[in-house]
Structures are given as structure tokens and as C-alpha cells.
View 1 (cartoon, helix red, strand yellow):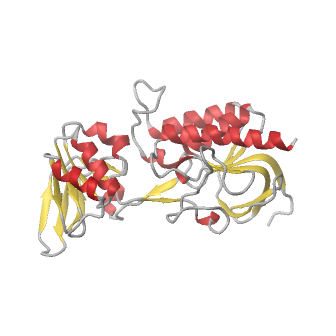
View 2 (cartoon, rainbow, N blue to C red; view 1 turned 30 degrees about the vertical axis):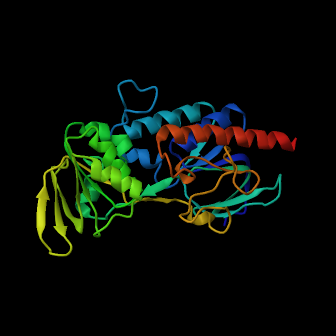
Length: 315
């Protein structure tokens, strides 16, 4: 452990649209923010090849390029962006207290305010062929990437409300949607199941799992198998949407901050305030409903404003 402890006004944990937007606003408020990016600098969006639905990019942009733009903007106003992973936290429970964090298990930082924007990680099946084609036809967000498959055939994997919602959403823009359900029933609400049943170009295959994603550089199809009969089948598709859930990156905050049963941080009312004074949460780490870059950016702005007001109230 380093003997020298750095004290800062505003610490931002995690990058991505929420973190970088918080950094822009915090910098302009003269909070002199320091950001630790985490191991995936730029967050989930760096796994997306094209972003067409973020305001200000009329011709679209690359996910990684967009994160570089946000990073450059934050740095222009004075944010210090550091590559590193926060491995331990010791947050104060007192108003005006100092929050302590450890970075990479060796460096200790003290902060007057902390903005958590560690995001959430999409759950995937874990197949080598699936992982290889993420960004080449495999996606975990129909709202983000569905437009690119307009008029084409796609597959959705999942059995809950998210899978049903994504499948019916895609049915409005795609030629055919095949929903793969691992068991012989769906976990989705009855209302969502009725929507699925009423959608003409949506076929549900029960007891069906993916054996392999087909294609070299882009998805060309999927080989599936019936987990009862063992029978295999190839479905020609250009897009595969995995909708089996997300895991918020909140493990180091367990027992410290209030979170729901699935690990999402709980914020108060319309604010980004957590249960501890001076600690704020923005982006997908506290949002399991929308999970969009633009909504994450919006809460990043809110978190910086909340942090500024909190510090102002101490003067």
C-alpha cells in the first residue's frame, strides 16, 4: 500500500457515457474530477461497431470512436482520466465525511464525493463462436442494433420479459424473428407472452439452445439443438440477440450501498443519490429499465450536479 494518500474533490469510478458526461459537468463546475476507467475503458459501448441513435451524430459513429470523443471532451475541461480498477471502498456514513477507495489493490485515494458509473455487463452464452462475432451480428441490445437488420431474419435468445419485448420490437422491422427458449415454457409475464403469440412473423422454439453461431466475420446462421430429442437444425439468420439478462458491476459495493435483489444500486427519487452522503450512482449501474447511452449520459449529468450541490451545502 502506498504511504502517500491523494485527496480529491470528485472521484468518478468507471467510464462510458455516464462517467464521461459526469466528468464533463464536474470539470466545468471546477470539481477537478479524477476518473478511474476500469478494465474496459469506455464501457459496453466499445463492443458496439456502430452507434446510430446518439444525438449529435447525424451519420452515426463507431462506439469506440464515440467514447474517445467523450473522453477528449472531458479532458479538455480538466478531467484526469486514469486507467485502473477500484478494488476496495470504505465510504463514510457522515455528511461531509471522506470516502476512501483502493485502486489496483495498492493505491489509496480519498475523495469528498464519489460518482459510481461502473455500468452493467450483458450476460452471454459463453460460446467461442458467439464471443468471436460480438459486433459482427451478435448483440445484447435490440434497441441499439436492431435497425441494422431491417428486413432480415434474426434470432432472439431468452425466455423472460426482456426477450419477449426485444423479439416483438424486432418483429416490427425484421422479416422474421425466431425466439429460442431453453425450457418448455416462457418466464415472461402473461401479457408479454400474449404479445409474442399474436405476432405473426415471430416463431417460438421451445427446448431449443444454440450449438454454434455460424459465420467467419459476420453472422450467417445459427445451429441449434432440441435439448429433449437432440435433433439439430440450422437457421439462416444475419443477427442474433442475446436477451438473458445483465449483471450490474456492483460486487465491491455489496454490504456498503443499498441495492436491489439483482445488484442494481438504488438511488433516491429522481436524483442520483445513494444511501450514503456524497456518493452518487449514474448509468446502467442503477438503471435496469432503459440501458441506453443517452439515458446513461443524462444521469451522468445529474450525478455531477448532485455532487456539486452536495459540496456547496457543506460550505
